[in-house]
Image (tube, one colour):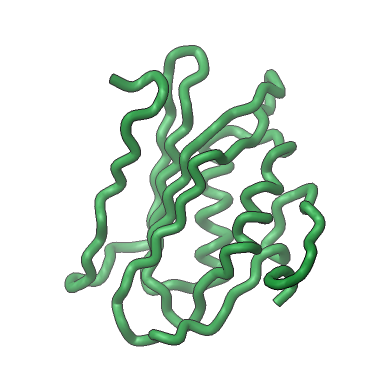
Amino acid sequence: MKHLGKQSKQPKNPDIKILDKVKNPNAGKNFVVRLTQPEFTCLCPITEQPDFAHIVIDYIPNKWIVESKSLKLFFNSYRDKKSFHENTTLEISETLNKLLKPIWIRIGGYWYPRGGIPIDIFWQNKEPPKKAWIPPHEVTPYRGRG
């Protein structure tokens, strides 16, 4: 563990090396882990204005689960990164998919409106197992939605 129980500097750029994974003590059981970051930020690559999102990640772990402090540092490392909503959402999902190699993973990036248009991005690696209970993504209400 690089971060848990230790003082950690805030990383300047997102990198898979920030993330720690721990052995799943319940391997073989189809349970869903939900990770939520309601105050995610990055920068618009054109205007350099801050963009805000509510990120919801659901996954069914295989051998690994992500350690939450390292995930917080990973999310925070986007604060000064210039990236479009689509790129950011897909980069987060692909990084976690590569790190964890879960049975199933999906992400919802619910981006707060700027200019009156909210942009929501969704990705999943494959269909979930048939007997797994998958909770719906329900991020409501947030600014600009009625």
